[in-house]
Length: 159
Length: 429
Image (tube, rainbow over all chains, first blue to last red; front, side, top):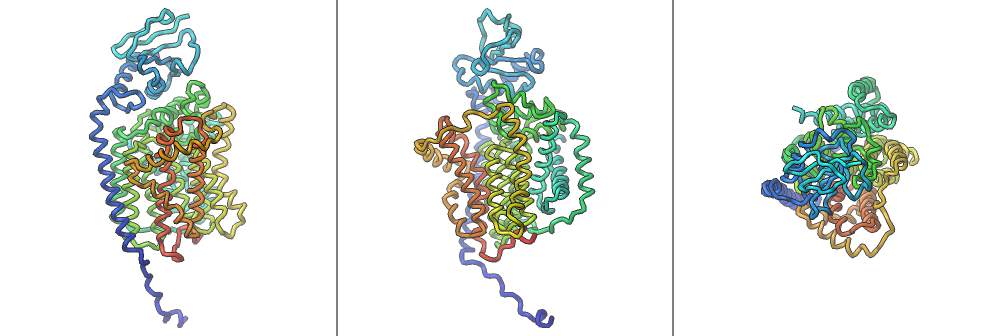
């Protein structure tokens, strides 16, 4: 016991030789990342006015961007027809045909109760199914117009 | 005030999860908020998955689950692991709060939402909330094959349950889970660094560096609502157990981390397997097979029912894999280099070149093995997926690096600690 009480304290822990340069490097890296963080926020804020108002292609849409707002207005107008489980085919302008998938996904995200399809992914419409056209009108005797809005129209597939 | 809901639910899960885990025999550390939250998330997902498979609507969970968990917590008489690895708040913690707060502010305004939340995670969550359970028939609809119906469902389940509690599906509210995950990840890094014989100045500078770097990526790459935060958190959570001899506390840590990863993403299942195997290779007194069983059981229990459902509803996507083509390397290498230079990551991907340094320290070799295995899996995916390889790398690798880089950078910091003096929190158990 006596030996334990009088034992010399352990030698102070020596800092490794690489301590000062490591600290300096970490401080520089932290500062760089701090500047990077601020730059990311500033870049985002600078881009927002453009992202909100520009007519972006569907794959680049963001919440609250102009085309999404347009689609939302169309969906609000046709809401009374979109009951749970209703099958709706999305039709987009011909120049955006390759991106119909994204418009369909946004429609599904905004109105998840209905089943949303594009002409490519669900062959064979059933009578009574709905067809939603965004920024486009159809001239097709197999469908009947239900509602026309400035953003698009809603049709019902005939028997 | 509804924006408080994810925070309140996170708090409830962090309190109830560890109590439940300890009740089940897992020695989950008492003073690790990130591990506590992860444990709660895994427990909630397990209950929601079981309810859904049993055909029980989720709404019965809300009155019963908190009561049941509170009872379990009250009945918990098992000794709690000792508190370790604590440290006083410092300037670096301000950097953590600033990065997380800034991210949360932008998330709440719906400015940094990942497109994947619109195209599958969020849409699945909406359907699950409407169906009051996991909507397997919806996932099986051929028209939604682009939704990755075969992905594990922890994140949509969590979002759907939060929406059910809130009484409405409000994206910014649900997306607040992402800053919470970033906070948990940084708290876990902080705790691991605190248990190392590094000077306070180095620990602080390192934490500030990682907080600002991850915050910049979270914002710049628009990661709100991305499921990639779950495997990233899982790997960082697992680090203390991977650098210490096998122990009961380490086993519980690996069990939670592996389950969290496996329930969140397909890549997470690979990560879970690697974590369990690497943990099993660590030296320890307990028989190896028991350690492997204990660490791997929760992940297996969450993965197997999901796998059965994927097979039953034929959800596996054909483009997930194909024949390997080494010729794709010519497209992969330049694309990887482009991703490494992406401004959101601020050069951090080049740290992958320092990976061999982990091998110099024997205690870091298990972590090095996990990182190499996971990176190898991503390379294998790029070599085999029958899609436009360059586009695939450019679109996915920045996100996938989030799984690896926080743990890699943490490992490199641990490699600078003086050898022979480390006292990882899990070692004493």
